[in-house]
Length: 491
Image (cartoon, rainbow, N blue to C red; front, side, top):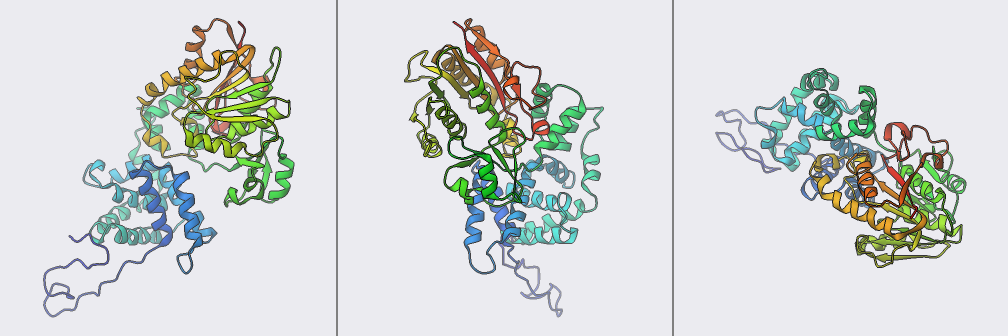
């Protein structure tokens, strides 16, 4: 078997023959390079080999492709297809793995990862897009010839032809266990989530089958891009006018939000390029709004964002603080992320300061601040729409790694706020071990604190839960699954 692209695998007989004496062989055809699928494959390999995130790897690859001259230069349709191939393959990886496993005669773990990337991208074209069957198979085989070699391309061809014999619903019925026999495993295969994540989300969400299925389906949908009009620098109405009402809509819940209805690079829009607006999920905006609206006893002059990187919430809080004559201190442990925070806050009209500091060993004294936000590091299970590869990297034991840090940061926050001030504990995860369990545990050791009902602080936003804390959901609010608990220091 010859796995080198561009070289003909030799059979018995003379070169250039079919192996039978006297009969000319079929001339070798070099594989045709498809720039779109090559780029998508490169992005998938970066995600797998370097633990990269697609939302960080893909944009520079697309930008470079658009800057090329000649036939390899990307247009908008090329970029859209490459994006769909990367994100669609990552979101549906679990389902596609199960289908591929049913069509091969070896354990899936024995298939080389690059081969599996080509296969899954081919399965996505067959079962998850409108690309015609023959085009999906032939394009995948050509890609395999280029990046894997002719020998493994034959394997890809054989597997995809088996898969092409049925549609997605048909395959899911074959490879997923019945719901009545194993509900969590059924949902894991059907909706392409690890079983432990299905279980954790179901526990957090509560309710029956319909709710969890809606949530898992929402995790597999492409999220819209949302901008924030940074307070004190611009307004949502101005951003809407500049972007164009044919390309954007107002936010659903946040008065600062603008939802983009067309693709393209948000960074090229003038409000974003000039720093007056930024890309920020509406759920993150609501967290900042709720903290800013929380009732205080006494002064309202000093605000803290204790885990400020990369700076989205800090920029919003700085703007809201400046409108009240207050100042924000934004602290971030990692120096490179602190620089991102500084970039996000540059141009804020009011006073602020950005420092590189460990929130568990703060350089400020106790009782310094009136409002404190601790948006703690977490598993990120609330943002699986945006980072679909995270669901395959995270493990249940990761929760144990985050738990001490989350508790330490919340302890710092409660010590840093004055009596009468308010702390916002936030995570981009709905997992109970990262939300209510942390809050309940830390509050036991701080008797002079009380939970505030955060729901009235977001008027018009439905389905916020039983309170007093808030849980947002992709399928109910169209946001990331952000969590927020507001805690007031009473003594």
